[in-house]
Image 1 (cartoon, rainbow, N blue to C red):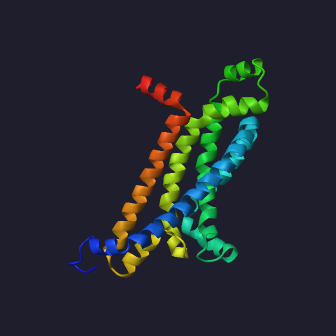
Image 2: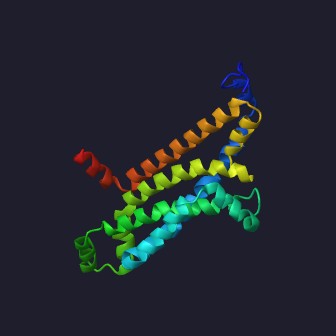
Image 3: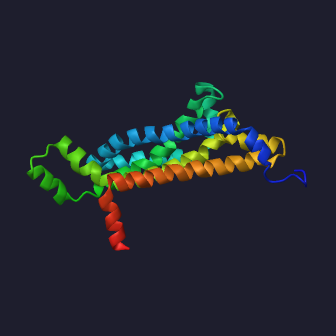
Amino acid sequence: MVDDEPIVRWYWIGDHVGYLGHLLADHAVIALVPVLIGLLLAVPLGLACARFPRLYQPLSAVFNIVYALPSLAVFVVLIPYTGLATQATVMIPLTFYALAVLLPTTVDGLRAVPDAVRQAATAMGYGPWHRLTSVELPAAVPYLIAGLRVAAVSSISLASVGALVGRGGLGYLFIDGFQRTFPTPIVAGIVLIAVLALAVDLLLVAARRLLAPWAVREKGAGS
């Protein structure tokens, strides 16, 4: 790297605002859509594991093994099937990574509902579906939000690795900066990824306060 090269050349950022916005939007889609898909898969799988406990350990083991695999290696393995520089190549592994985080939190949330609460709901005439949607899932919301916060931040970080296989949103800035020994794109990418992660995390915290205000009050009372 050239010794007199500054860390940030602000004129470059000013000249590339549209480009940076495009990469940020692409990064958000690649990173967050897998988290949403993971949530949609984690809820029914979590329900099945809560109802049939023997199912949880093997499923959890499979997803933990997937989570331990290096993301770049998984991307490369998928290229012959999903193509180079496609969203699917990056989003499929990220979905499994999100699911590996969300499944345990979903199961923990459902198991945290006291049996007395379930029995009381049944005594009030709640059927299984009504009890699930009105009692069990709302009680599990704090656990789900906690899992979403971890999964979302992890996915936002991992998505940048996808640039090495042609589709990584803000990850392009890292490759561009290293290839040209030009640190400005690297700094811009780091800052934008951090801002995106912080914004998503704050939105999830706000959602938790809105959907589970009792959990916030209980935490405040216990502190």
